[in-house]
Length: 181
Image (cartoon, rainbow, N blue to C red; front, top):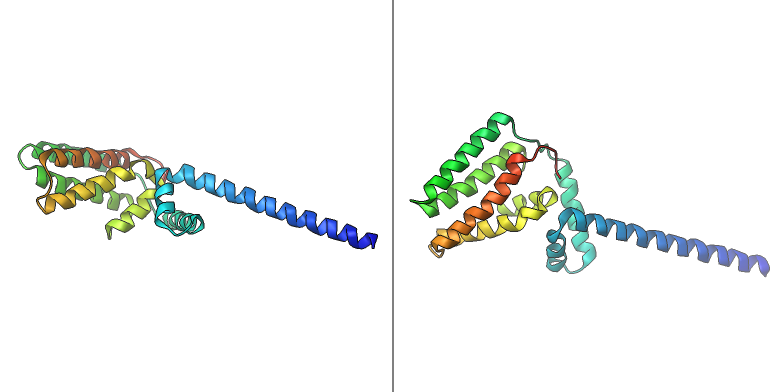
């Protein structure tokens, strides 16, 4: 009987240690994802049925991102894009709606040259969320304003805000020199 009790105690201890280890790993993963994705972590949790599904989605984004060949721009490309951005900003005075459209296209062009997929907006958001979570809301807001502008539902101030938001991501993409974060 004493042997049985000791075996039971050892089994319970092993199960308890395994459970504690699992919880510690979950907390570490959650901390990593919160740090990596910032506000995008909370957005993902809000959009999914449960935290586990949201975290799995974010881990999948990291995996897909790691498979991409994302690289910094050459100095020549960086200078060319910076000059094009200046031209877009100058056109804003006379044609704000057109300038916002050009800003969106310029951000997409920089993404493409850096190695990001640019097929659709959702894919761009997903990929950018891995290394650019801090400026992702800027991109979302700019894109939303751009859509309203296409329907003639945006004021000049809205368009100015879109340019500011596009510039936040543009500058980050333009000057980033290392892969990912």
